[in-house]
Structures are given as structure tokens and as C-alpha cells.
Amino acid sequence: MIDFWNIRYAENDFAYGKEPNQFLVENIDHIPKGKMLFPAEGEGRNAVYAAQKGYEVYAFDTSIKAKEKAIELDKAHNASINYQVGMLSDLHYPENSFDGIVLIYAHVPNEIRNDFHKHLIRLLKPGGVVLFEAFSKEQLNYSSGGPKDYDMLFSEEEIKTEFSSLQFTQLETLEIDLNEGKYHQGRASVVRFKATKL
Image 1: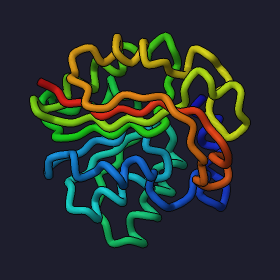
Image 2: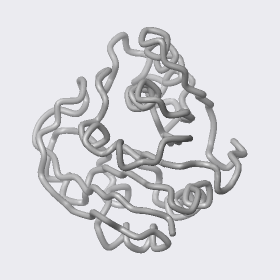
Image 3: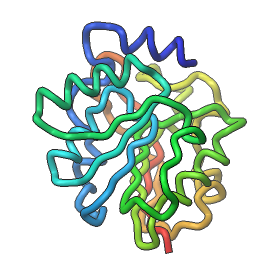
């Protein structure tokens, strides 16, 4: 998968555009001002937006090409993000240190997904907020982007299980129209949630 993402992010254009995700834009003010983490952040569009809004932003991805594009975007906007390349388990972020975690289309292989999410929640401070948007199981009926592996897509039931330590203030599956660069275009089925760590 690292090779796949390096090839995609090596393209001249930004694969998912330079503008932030709309769900993040509409809900960023729900995250307390402070430190924010962006897992699987890709080319940095969401992290750079948060930095411009005054957050102390950390991001990571497994693709070095993603980081290169993110730093390019970061410099163009005079933002300041801390971006690392690697697996979450190797990056040694302190527990209970982030005020917000933003998961935007962070689809990871099913065999590591539950542990990945549990690890992220340990990094979140009590009172911290998670914003989440990803493709639902129904996305296999659409051609607007996302994994073609059913097990990498999400249902509300899976989210309730994998994020059981959080208190949800919003959890829904809905159809939206995507317009995010070359690879997120058209009608899509997504799961979104906002939740707080107690």
C-alpha cells in the first residue's frame, strides 16, 4: 500500500485537491483550541487548514510523497505543521496529549484497524474531540472513490464498537456529492461522526 500511495501522490496535481474537507470546515470549531492530530493525512489539505485556524497541528502518513506535497502546501499558506512519515506504532506520540483527532478518509487494512483506532483514542485528552468522515459499506455501489475492499469500509455498528470509549454527539450514514480533487468526484456514501473522550 505504501507503493500505491507514493505513486498516487507523485502525480503533479493534488490527488484530493488543496481545499479542506467540508465536514471538517463545518465542525472544526467543536475541537478545543490546542493540539490536533491528522492520521493518514496525505497531501496536507486538512492539516494546513487547521494550522491556519490557529491549532498546533501534527500529521502523519506512510507515504514520503504525501509529506513532500503537504510541506509544499504548508509553505504556500505560511502555515506550520509537524508532519511525520511512518506507522502510528512507530511515531511515539504521548498519550493524553491531543485536544482533537481528525480522521478524514483514513481507511486502513482491517487486520490493524481496531488497534489503530484504540491507539489513537489513547492519544486524545479527556474532553478531546474526534471528527470522522469515511466511506460506508454502501460505497461499493458508487464510483466516486475509496477502497474496493468491503472490510476497509465502515458501518455505524463497527464505529460504535471500535470507538466504544467515546461519547457520540453525531453519528450518521448519508449520501453526499464529493468534489475533492481527481479521485473524490461524484455521489458517495459516507459515515460521519463527532465524539468526545470522557
